[in-house]
Amino acid sequence: QVQLVQSGAEVKKPGSSVKVSCKASGGTFGSYSISWMRQAPGQGLEWIGRFIPFLDITNYAQKFRGRLTITADKSTGTAYMELRSLRSEDTAVFYCATEGDDGVVWDSWGQGTLVTVSS
Amino acid sequence: DIQMTQSPSSLSASVGDTVTITCRASQTIISYLNWYQQKPGKAPKLLIYAASSLQSGVPSRFSGSGSGTDFTLTISSLQPEDFATYYCQQSHSMPFTFGPGTKLDIK
Figure (cartoon, each protein chain N blue to C red):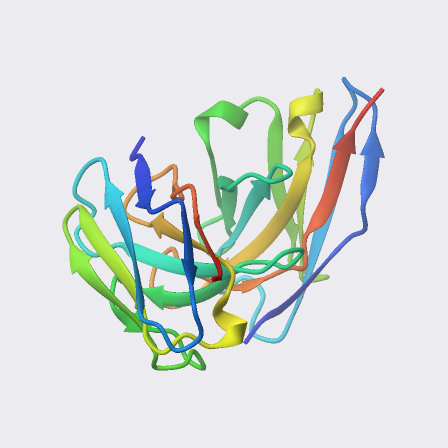
């Protein structure tokens, strides 16, 4: 099974950007899709987008289009999530997760990265 | 977007009990329904996929059923480590959406 390790917590000012990394080990990077989710404090889970390396396709949830970029560096086995024009409502834990062989089913998760947006 | 609802939103039970959590989709999702368990400060963990398939390594006391718009997660003979929040998630169409969660705590 794939193991995912995310970058550390970030504190950002409103209007700035954040870039979170997700390094994969085990499995063959590029053979599985990587999704990103977020979870605001005390709230539920929200899918924000994914990268499908073998098709070189990125999908974004409508509400994040224009502010979100998901990329991957196959040479290092690392995926990235960049969110721009941050606002306080973006304060959340961001998770990366890989899809298994059974469709959009997230069977391996990173440990989560807390992004705090505060002036 | 497909809206997911769960009931109850919270549930109190005792070790050894059997509990059932219900998830409903706003339109048919066939069997594209997954269940996750999340403990405080931890990432979610996949329990059930495709409505009724048990993820490898997950105890058999967890089971899922349903199709179309209505689904259930049943946990038999609750163990202390089962007290957590449970989320359903549809993988039928983007955006992939989660239910609001059911918090299971000890009575």
